[in-house]
Amino acid sequence: MRRVLVLAACAAVGFGVLGGCGSASGSGQASSGPAAGQQLEAVDNGFRPAQLTATAGQKVTVVLRNDGATLHNFSIDAVGVSKDVEPGKRLTVTFTPSSAGTLPFYCRYHQALGMTGSVVVAG
Image (tube, rainbow, N blue to C red; front, side):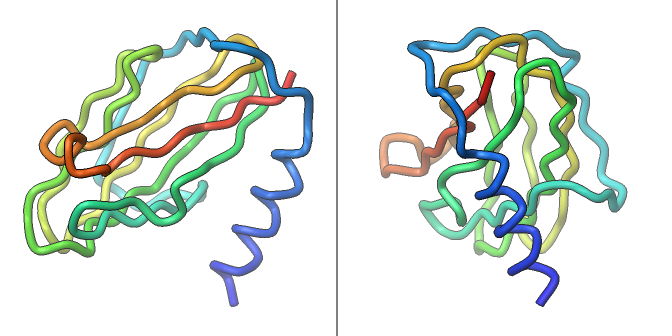
């Protein structure tokens, strides 16, 4: 039930004006402790969901859980994030997008296999 509520809230935030290529700033901080945030699962060669939402100027927290059998990575070049997560582990990443647009994310180990997604940033 919690996941449904989180996804519904994410979808509600995502209805906004979509710009071209967005830029972002932030520390790209990561930790391994639990935190409230948008839930993201890494499975073998994919992310679920493949699209996250954010609002420009507001901190985004993504909690990534690796449900796959191999090492995965969460990278967003525009905000300087590149963090590995071992199988069965969880990782919390925070960043702040500075403008509306789309921020692509990917697993650096499996990007060629389609392990990609995006953060849609509303203005």
